[in-house]
Image (tube, rainbow, N blue to C red):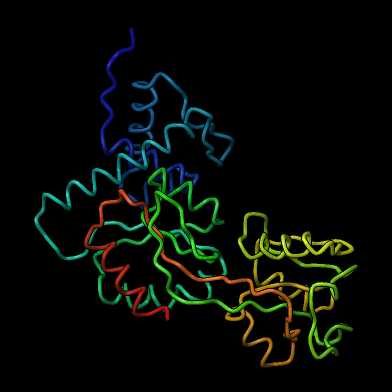
Length: 300
């Protein structure tokens, strides 16, 4: 017989915070508790669940397999608890917590302006940002790990997600100023035969679209190098290492300064759009509604 487990919100909040920051000391500072309190709450949770949730490897704290399983449920429980308090408070003013997913390119070039305005207008909302790929965001939206996501993707039509297009995002195929292709008036797919490509990480929507185009045309680059950072990609291309594809908004400064050359792509359109997406069954809190409205006004 399995005994009943009486998990408390405080225990779960301590557990989730330790999991996120990887330290009991940092979690105590963030939650304004004594470290002994955090340790006691996590130990009590481990005893109730009869499972070890963390491995303590020197100063580093990492989740066990059981801890990883609990984390997804704990995130949902804390979100639902916050939503319940907000509904019952009767207040329509945006407050509470809001978790946003976004790719690195949008975090750097689209989100700062939106978040600056949002924080100024709604200071009582605590914002958490998670960087990932489109595949990550779909999973996180379905598991309620994030409330909303910004996608850089072709116009989405996924049955259980609601996507609001915000702005069409032109893409640019780029090289360093000394690259041979920089001297051509325009380039197409077949100009990339045998070229070295510098690509964003797997799961990135525009990388996938680019590779699909090349594969369908039978174009074989000589090799490719993968980076998770847009800035690292730009530095490599500027140094003459290869060709890349990036959102034009991410390279405007470097193109204007002559460090990067926009190769005037004559191939198929990538049809990328920045969209704000949430689950169709998601409760639209005042905080989330305010973000949806402000995104439509700001990113355009």
